[in-house]
Amino acid sequence: GTKIASDGLKGAKMAVGKNKRISKGKKGGKKKLVDPFSKKDWYDVKAPSMFTTRTVGKTLVTRSAGTKIASDGLKGRVFETCLADLNKDEDQAYRKIKLRCEDVQGRFCLTNFWGMDFTTDKLRALVRKWQTLIEAHVDVKTTDGYSLRLFCISFTKKKQGQVKRTCYAQSAQVRKIRAKMMEIMQREASSCDLKDLVLKFIPESIGKEIEKACAGIYPLQSTHIRKAKILKSPKFDATKLMEVHSDYAATEKFIDVGEKVEEPAEVADEA
Image (cartoon, rainbow, N blue to C red):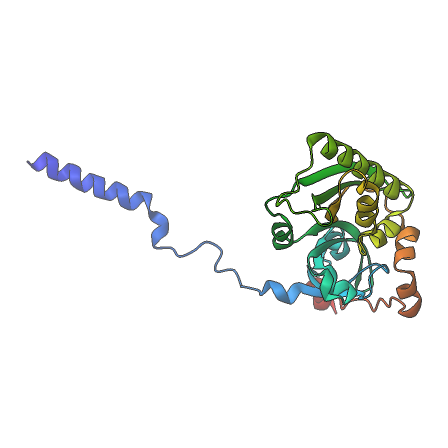
C-alpha cells in the first residue's frame, strides 16, 4: 500500500514540474491594443467620364508604412455599384456595374469599367412560361485591346393577333437567332473601344439591333446584354486612363498634401 501512495506523490510532483509557467504570468507582458482604424485613411472613388455621377463612394486603406505603400493596397480593388446611382436614372436600377481602381492620385482612386451584370430579380422577372429563352455568349476584343466575354439573353414573343397561347421557336430558328446574336455582338464590340462599348450597353442599343435583325426569323422581346466580363486588359497606360477621367482632371487638380510623418524615437532622444 505504501508503494502506491509514494507513486501518487511522484506523479503529482511531475505535474507541477511540467506546468511551471502557470505561476509566472504571461511572457513579454500584454500587447497594447491599438485601434486599427486609427492607421487608416479614406480615399474617394472616382468613376470614369462615361457616367454622370463621378463620385462613387469612399474606401479605406492602411496608411503607407515602411515598404507597404497605401496606393498598392488600393490598386486592383473592384467596386460594384448600381447604374441607377451612376447615371441618376432609376430605370437602370437592375444593372450592376463593376469599376476597378487603376491608379491613385492624391486622395482619389481613378477607376475604369471592369464588368456589368444584371440583378438576380430582374433576370427572374424576365423568365416566363410559354415562350422560348435564347442565350448566347461570345468573346470579343475592343480596338483598345480589352478582351471581353458578352452574354446575351432574349425571349420569343407572340406574333400580332396571335391566339395560340404559346410562342415556341423551333430549334433551327433558335440556332439561327443565336448565330445572329453572336455576329452582332462581335461586330458592335470589335469596332469600338471600351468606353464606346460601355456607352452602347447603357441604352441597350445592341439588344435593339439584335431584335431588329432577328425579326425575320422569329419576333423577339426583352433582348439584353445581361453580362459583360473583362477577361484580359492591356498593360496599364496612364494617358489612356486620364482620357476617361479627362474632364475631371482638368477641373479638379489632384493636390497631394503629403502626410504627417512621426519622428523616430532614436532621433527624438538624440535631440
